[in-house]
Length: 325
Ligand code: UT7
Image 1 (cartoon, rainbow, N blue to C red):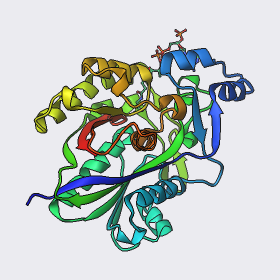
Image 2 (image 1 turned 45 degrees about the vertical axis):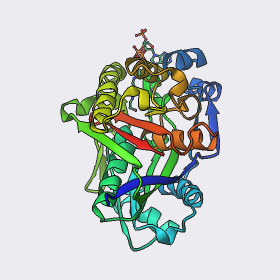
Image 3 (image 1 turned 90 degrees about the horizontal axis):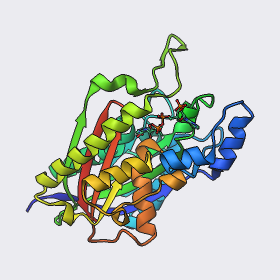
Image 4 (image 1 turned 180 degrees about the vertical axis):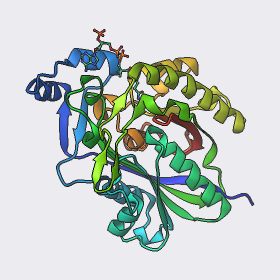
C-alpha cells in the first residue's frame, strides 16, 4: 500500500505587541519617515502587524505554534521524529533553529534542521517533510515557519518597513494510507538574488555588508504574479486535478493585490482565498501556516477540503503544495 503524508494538526502564534498602521505611522513620524494608513492599505491590504519584544526569538514563536499543533493532532512532543523549521531569521548562525526548538519542546532525538527559502520556506519544508515521510525516513513531523522579520527591517526605509511582521505557524504531518499531500512543485532562479535580500554576513567577529532587508518591490511583484500561477497549474497537473478541485487557495501573504491577481488567473473567486495579510502583514515563511491555522480555527477550512498552498520570495524562490486536509 502506498504511503502518504497528511496534516493532522495546525497551530500558530503571534507575539502580543500589535501595531496598527496608525501606530506604525506615528512611530515612523518620530524619525521623520512619512507614510500613511491610506497608502499602506491601498497598495498592500495591510492594516496591522505583530512585532516581538527584545529577547524573543524565532524558536520561541515556533515553540508556541508547535504546542498548539501537537495539541490539535493529539500528540506529545516525544512522538515527533522530524522537525523542519523554515526561517530566514534563525536564532543563531548555528545550530539550526530546529535544534533549539527541538530541545525547548523536549522532542529530542529525531532529525531536526532548517530550510532557507525565505517566503517560500514553508512550501519547501512541507515538500521535504512529505518526501521523508513517503520514503519511510520519518513518521511524524513538525513543519514550522517562524520569523522575526522586524529585526531585519530598516525603519528609515518606508518602502519596506511597513510591509513585514513577526509570527510562527506549524503543522503536524503524519504517515497515512489516505492521501493528504497530493503533489508539489518547487523552483528557484538565483539570477534574481539582488531583488530581495539581506546582503550582510558575519565574518571575523563583525557584520560585513548591510544586515537590513533590501527589496525592489515592483520587480518582486511582477515575478510573483507570474510564478504563482505557473506553480499552481503545474501542481494541479501533477495531481491530475483542475482549478475546480481547489476549495481554498492559501497563498503567501505579502500583498492583497498579488493574491487577487493570482486568484483571477486561476479563475478562483476571492471567497476561496484565505486572507490574513490585513492582520499579520508579511511574515515570510510563517505566513502560510499562520493563514492555514487561522482558517482552520475559524471553521473555514475543514477536514476533506482540498487546499493549494503557494509561496514566493527571495532567491528568487517559488512553489506550491496541493493537499487534502
Ligand atoms: O515576501 C516576498 C514577496 N514580496 C512581495 O511580494 C512584495 C511585492 N511588492 C509589493 O508588494 C509592492 O511593489 C510594494 C507594496 C512594495 C510597493 O507598491 P507599488 O505599488 O509597487 O509602489 P511603488 O514602489 O511603485 O511606489 C509608488 C510610490 C512611490 O512614490 P513616487 O515615486 O511615485 O512619488 C514611492 O516612493 O509610493 C511611494 N511609497 C510610499 N508612500 C507612502 C513607497 N512606500 C511608501 C510608503 N508610504 N510606505
